[in-house]
Image 1: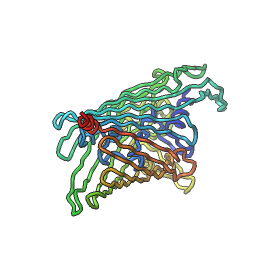
Image 2: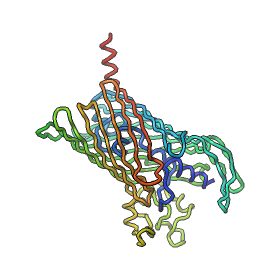
Image 3: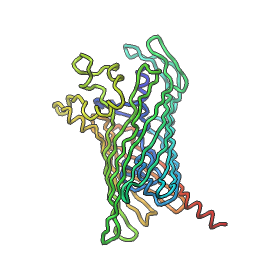
Image 4: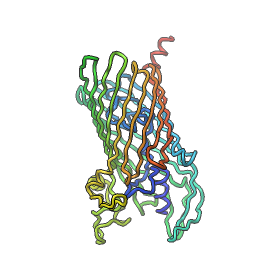
Amino acid sequence: MKKIILSILTLVGLALPALATNPVITAMPSLTIAPDAHAAGMADIGAATNPDLNSQHWNPSKYAFMESKGGITVNYTPWLTKLVNDINLAYIAGYYNIGEMAGTVSGSFRYFSMGEVTLMEMDANYQGSPLGTAHPNEWALDVAYSRKLHEYLSMAVALRFMYSDLNNGINSSTSNSPEMFPAWTMAADVSLYYRQPIPTPMGESYFALGFNLSNLGGKMSYDEGYTKHFIPANMRLGVSYELPFDDYNRLMISAEANKMLVPTYNSKFANDGNGGQYDQVDYAAVSSPKGWWQSFCDAPGYFNENTGKHVSATMEELQEIQWGIGLEYSYNRQFFGRVGYSHENYYKGNRRYVTLGAGFKLSIFSLDFAYCIATAPSNPLDGTMRFTLGFDLAGIKDLVNNKK
């Protein structure tokens, strides 16, 4: 049953190519999928970009800088359309500013449907026998509180409940594997956002830094504690600078790096008496807090067949950092054009892609679209589209009052 779980997590959740060496695989990988078209149009960058309705996923501290009283957004993403046509992600987020001194509350709900999956039991010769079909799904619900600590600095904390059901209630078992049950756990986020205006001859520009530690929580088990899986704890660090050209035209450039705070499975730090290599029991026994720290210094290194050289442990750790850069052009803060590039190491998944996006915003609602163009061969993320529809509560309230 472990092979069934890992197959679903790898193929459906992350779409990691088979060439990946020591990839980081977790439970509920859908939590790492960019849910909105705004950030997705800039190569999945959002920690230090301008505050928007979907800041809950990227950096909820940004809500403290929102100019409007509140808002809500609805997002939809057809996922892995090159492979299947029934996997999708739905995401709803919103916020409400209680007051300048009271802070801002926000929340989101995401639902990831994995379509129909045939469950297979694999024997020692990798021959499979069907166990039935299931409709796996995952969902998460979170709330956050953000507040300005200074004129230019804000902080937020978030609490998240997550639930993953990989077999949709079909708790099939065999003589060699236990039943597979739904898994759940709770996690927290801690984030910071710094945004300072800088006067220029063309107008006021903005420099911003963003930092977010997300999904810091317990493990998930699909067999009632027999095996425990790490959740996708992540550290995200971003920087952005928005420069005006005149009263109407502005350009923002952003860069971001993120690293999974999950230990590498084939780690040199396992104390199992077998030369320092993990087996499944050792790996499952590592606690979440220990795994967060260990993720910075546990890559074992590997032999690169393409170059014929050994990759050191330090270099492999650096390869686990995924980075991206994005540009956003705006006209009168109503029309937006976006482009970005995201890079992941060849041996850590090779998910490399260019993104394009566009947006339109009025006082009442906003509409955004993003499209992904893979630059690595056989990348199932190629052609991924995202759609976002946002509503400004203050704008709606003003419209209603004007009609009275």
